[in-house]
Image (cartoon, rainbow, N blue to C red; front, side, top):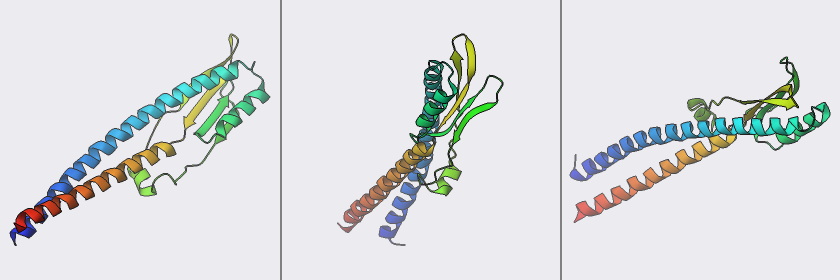
Length: 171
């Protein structure tokens, strides 16, 4: 095998190894970060929405309209209000949106985040429990786009290293 081919092979193997390790570390780190941020967002949004519902005086119609308006923003997979005994009063749920990333990618890196849970108060009385789950499609989109950007960067680096190596060997 010529020195030229050996150089190309060495560069490709080295970059493939570096790419694989970088992709794994970066993607898992980004996934953990996004899961943590979604968990915080779930808790904060549930608390804020429960406080807003409590200020409406436990009016069932107003609470349902408020929850429907919040759900219709498209940022939530689930919003559920249960009475103090756990019986669901209002439930809005959406299916999984597969348009954010390829299905195989979503199955390979499942984003699992606990829902935000907060108590709705009517004065000193508990009016219910609010459960809220933010949509994970935004996290999947960010994770997928970051992975594609990393792959493109490494592809360009491999081509650049190959061109520089070829020019150096021709001298």
